[in-house]
Length: 271
Image (cartoon, rainbow, N blue to C red; front, side):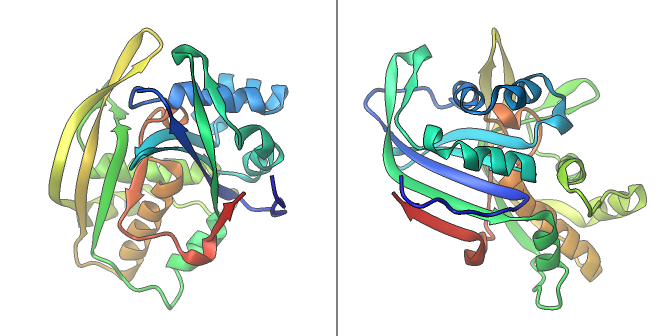
């Protein structure tokens, strides 16, 4: 498999590339969650399967890019990062999908991005940070946020910020961001600038389905204090790892932002 990277970090993004010989549905997140949990140690897998949101420190999704399938796993704390690192040999191989009686062929390409909550915070709260006022979010897999007992299948600025603040504070061991007064101030400076190709899509879950939206949305940070600009940029960068909204462990809420991840955080291995 090649030499492993020995690292201790709080956040890791693992991207594994596959080819398929048969036509498959768009959303395979639930299928690959089963593969992931089977690969992990049984005790941890049981905790992740039965745990509440804050006890599931990972996101898992599968999406198409050109003619490849990409399986992306984001570990959001040290325990999960180390657990995935220990089981890479079980993940970096062909994967048989029982539900579809087909095999995805591993392409021998694996990408790793690593960082931490502390490093992300330093990146955006340093004197070198350059304020950005327009950021594009590409919603790759259906995204939905639950509020007042219902699932919203369209983007709403305040709920996006709230979702990201919650995810950050759930998994960041030291740096907490949520403050009610600050939150109520921030959402007044964060708005949708333009929407492109937005559409609703359903994700089959068990015997039912959940609605969500995909598409491109440009968000504008209105002129404000530097602190507000820093916080919004930090949260949107974090969305590349945490996803947005509900059921990110089974493939929903996958986001790519227009601000690329820093090259210093990226290692590409061709094994």
